[in-house]
Length: 529
Image (cartoon, rainbow, N blue to C red; front, top):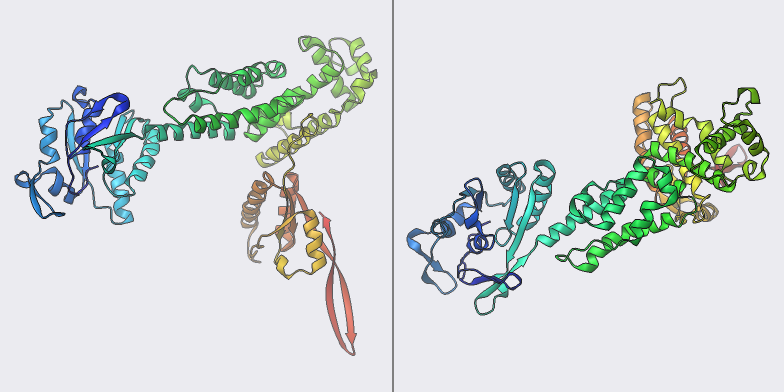
């Protein structure tokens, strides 16, 4: 970017790389030296973005003279166009006209002009020294946008700090580590939010921590139950050192991986690694993997309680059959097992019959989720996608209580979703609500009488999504009272996700004064739907 200001002369230096530029007024010329643009080829390109004012005052300088308005003197002033020509670069040099950037429309015009210059897979070198104050932000956003859509790679970002010069030597500040930290942050967030290690693997090739994390994620994504049960990848991950990046502040970089490490340490402390992996999959929206690992985690736990080795596959299969026989009360002549004597013996054992995970197993089997997944919904009793998700998340939450490290309690929240704000309640109703959780008012929508079923359903989904999102952060109770058809559908939807819904009950008090009757309603309690 070329500005329109009057530039003083100095050398730009980078002591770390023992670089000293030719003395120049223009950081752009110093940057071309710094990135060794003389070795670039005709396939490469230098773009100097300039406004009409910058073109007149700093690119094509008339007669090689310019007035220094600070002391009203005319000075020798060679334009950047002439200087770049004298560098005899083999690459293309393009002066790109951009507007002054005085409005939002002009800002987007600058963004589009620069973006259109980029091609698929380009390596991009940036200098952020000159231009409007918002341009560094615009260029960084442009980089992220082009990385995603054109797969560019940012190789260099520098800033020439003219104001910090001493003895006419101004430092080059390397800004590339900020972009790299941003890349690592997005990659770490992608893992923590979605369980995806692709971006981390691209950035950290050869790092033990990243390779172990990739193996761990793949084990969970592909339901490699034995690896998960034996804690192979997770132990390797926790024993690996964090990745190292010498270009970034060590503490900032470490904190990214400590966040991942902390999540995995908490998972590793749980007594049933398959159930823990199932909860991880559910949190990353890998619902089919979650329900598969949950059932296999139950079978593995019952195997452990009955001293059955994980490698004894026939016995493991018979144990799974025995759980189903116990659940369905199937007669012996219909058993399809490898060893009937083993199953008979198992059905008599207290460690089998009174296993704490049996109730969870019954709930999963009764829901039919696993078969619904495995048959892709081609069943008479198929569930909707929303119901499948709700069911998996519900059993996942319940499975938490069966591991030795229970989930941290969430703060309690009481959402008042009615037409009556809590500020209008009597003291006894406020106290009753506060015992359930912190009160938060949410305005009830205007459900018009002419709305059809589809619009009601859409409205229900809009508010259900809002409350479901809240339930991930809070132990949520929703006080729902209002238009009856909307209320009924919303309560059904929230209850499917295990969210507690209540209504307020009141006592009607009638006072008579002659022929006049006055009705008042006194709050009694909150009652669950």
